[in-house]
Length: 142
Image (cartoon, rainbow, N blue to C red; front, side, top):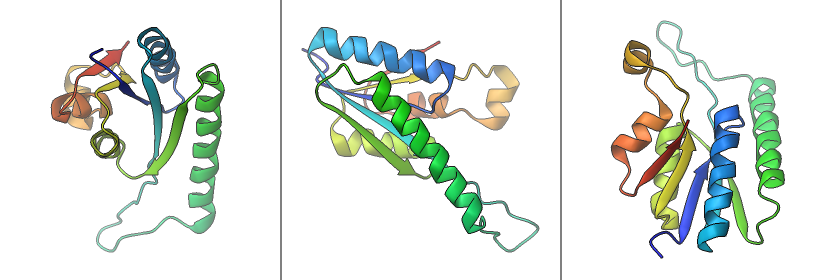
């Protein structure tokens, strides 16, 4: 079997739900282990010079939203016996890549936001960054 440990990146969007469903089916069909990661990114705005940290209540709101996304991932994968769902904090693309390497994942499955051309060039894209820097194959679900 070429893939034994699959990592699905999940952010709660419609495309990530579709990707998680694909990852669940793939794991079932290939008797592979499935791990799901959600990365909570709490933005830190910079106003002219000094760093501005998010107020505690705002950070708490981000973490509560992240927990709701984790709960949704658990619900969507409940038919699999051994699914590990993990919440990380940081830059999404970097956290996905680090987690995949640390966990020995041999396939990453994630959704695409569908940014095109100039917008992707200017803004960047989590899926684009993961594809460009991953040491393992990446399946992008559209």
